[in-house]
Amino acid sequence: MKKSILFLLIFVGIGVLPNLLRIHLPGELGDLQYMESIAYSALLMIFWLAVCKKLWVAMATALVFISWWVVEVYLRLQFRTGVNASFVGMVRETNPSEILSFVTTYGVTLVLPWLLSVVVFAWLVVFSYKKKWEWSHRSRAWVLLGFSLLGGALYWTFAQQEPDDLAAAPDEFSVRPMSFWVEKWADIYPTNAIFALWKDREYRKLMHALKGRLNNHQFEIKKSASIDPDLVVLIIGESSRRDRWSLFGYSRLTTPNLEKRPNIYLFKDMVTVSTATRTSVPEMITQHPIQRPDGVISKAPEPSIVSIFKQAGYKTYWLSNQSSSGFYDSPIALYASEADQRYFPNPSSFASRGSLDEVLLPAFDNIIKQSGKRFLVIHTMGSHFNYAYRYPTAFERFKPALHPDRIFLTTDPSQKKEANNAYDNSILYTDYFLDQIFQRMESLSGKSVALFLSDHGEDIFEPGCVSTGVTRTSRYSYEIPAFMWANSPYLRSSPDYIAWIKSLENRRLMTQDVYPMILKAAGIDVVGQEYPLFDNRVERMVYGQNRWVDFDKELEKDACVIGRR
Image 1: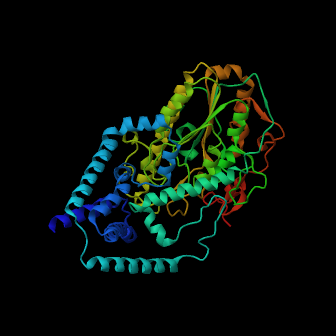
Image 2: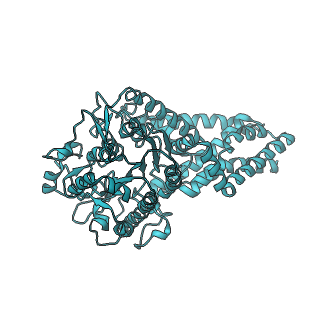
């Protein structure tokens, strides 16, 4: 009897352990969520044992979720997140050579423990089978009844809290949300993997349907034989504000590498059309995105510059340290799917630690070694909150800074100094990452050109503004860093383009202007398209506080809240 209880505890403990490693948010709500995940997982394991009756049957069926148990523990320890839709998307986008590289890299820390856990659990199955342990006591019936009643009561309780419009899709990229009660299980091991697979499948179905609206579009293009670079790179940063780059005049030295680098041409007055990544990035890469920042759906959407470069004879790539699906990611992943090859190595979403941007460098190295003309989009995690997750400890130059293992709430003013220091450290790391890209491009004999800009900026307890924490309402959330860099062969072959780029240094630019900039850098002209950049721009319309406003006029009225009514 004692041995069977011990095996029961092992069975329950296996299910509970990953949930002990989940992020424990501060405060009463954080305590409640943490204890709920532990209690729910323990009850689920006990309930499953009661359903199976025989201990060996329960353990044998549990081998299914034990197959990813070590992965779950590893993700929670390393990235502070469990198996989720981002991880499923990463695995789905991974090719055989990348899987081999993963196994080689993590063989000791992940693959061997996984094999060991499966062997040990298989032995437990055989041992309990031979002992013929089973739950024959009447308490089994009480557990089945009690769990069913408790589950029904909780489902009804959560259902009363749901708004009537829960099932309504707020925009084109929404998947119907699950009920509040079901959502409770979406971050609890082992049920989280089921929901991760479901969410990834739903978003893939959604993107497949939306992509069908773009597939039949063909551009009429003309190419300039004089420019015609071999390598064109568009680098999209994340949450980076211009005033925190020493390259643009910040008092702290946050961009030491870029300041030493020649052939950089700054755009000193570029603003983003939207402070949300999911709507700002599509505005950069296509003239007619499926959905505008205000939610208006285009009647005639167009593919992105990825398809234009493909038509122009370039092999296209999309390297992203963000996710391949999800409410915040699908609007961008839709356009990434146009590329010949895609690389999404981050097993986490923006909400967790995730991988550092340098994880993209090996893939970049492989691409630039190839022959032929190549176009790349590199989408980084940049300075996305939590800033302490975005750089290694070697880049913690500005102290005291946020600690990656401590929870920081965006509304907590007590760590304002630490948050700002961590943010500057993330810019320092971005400087390193970009310099690594340019070093590699500089060594190429062919003509290479790159353009960098951020999707939006960030407010971090702005002095002089009534700010409740980390938000995106002030001028600093709209004013972004942007510049172009080219290697020597490109500069020698494209003097007219470089002269034009220099003329834009102090022009009032917007993120949509990147579209003609990057096409013109490759000597590509799309017949019939007109670009506001080439006209005398009268106003810069941005989306702020749920309405379209002229950024420059708003700046004169209130720099703290663009779009204040």
